[in-house]
Length: 115
Image (cartoon, rainbow, N blue to C red; front, side):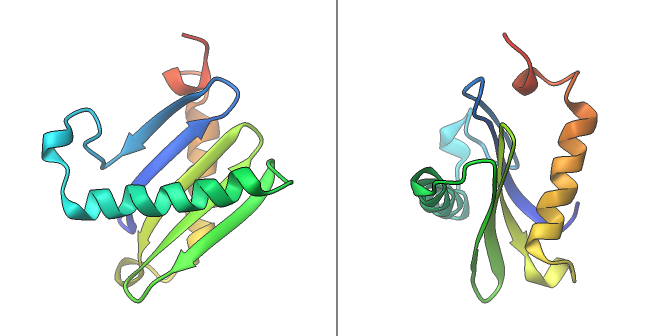
């Protein structure tokens, strides 16, 4: 998905997460755009935590060149930074596509099973 710049996926039941295009393992490689994305994801996640509905929730924050969005479905919370100039799709459509990809990989990925 060319339009997705950064992704953070949380499995709330197992308290595990994974990232895409974010150098969290090697913080010295983190750029200011990564830090900003994490700050925006934190704000979205705080809004998610304060919401009474934790299973089917969509939140987004739209800026001039990108959108930060959160999709909570079941045990998964997906947060992504989507570039406007790389897609005509709505941010939630992109997150729904990511959610479908998660379901396909659910059995083989560490984030979706007990470690």
